[in-house]
Length: 146
Image 1 (cartoon, rainbow, N blue to C red):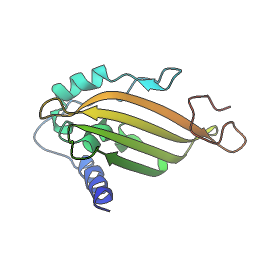
Image 2: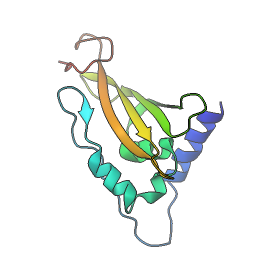
Image 3: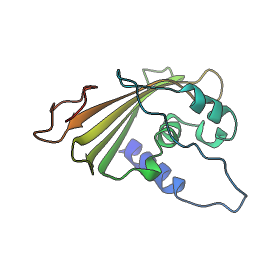
Image 4: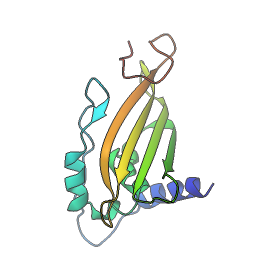
């Protein structure tokens, strides 16, 4: 419940404006490769520069990487986990369902993050899709929908 409230708070804050001047924006990840892999190097450069505000938590980094403020999905679920007492690694899984697409029903992003110092960085990012009924596979896969 606490994580859900944190996600709601982060998403609400993402929509707030600021009068402190213009903010450089991340335009979103490049299209995924055939294996579902998304490049993370450019985003890590962004986090180290103009995007330092998003490097403070795995959920904030994931939200900005995927540009969830621009997503049009019926439901969006963000789950962040960290192993045991170690707090320098995290996995964030974002599931976007009820997409407005005639072939793809849902997209699931899995982001692996690490904190080599005080800021978070993406280690890897992948995406899989679930097709609309009758348009391909019913489970999440990197195979295209028809």
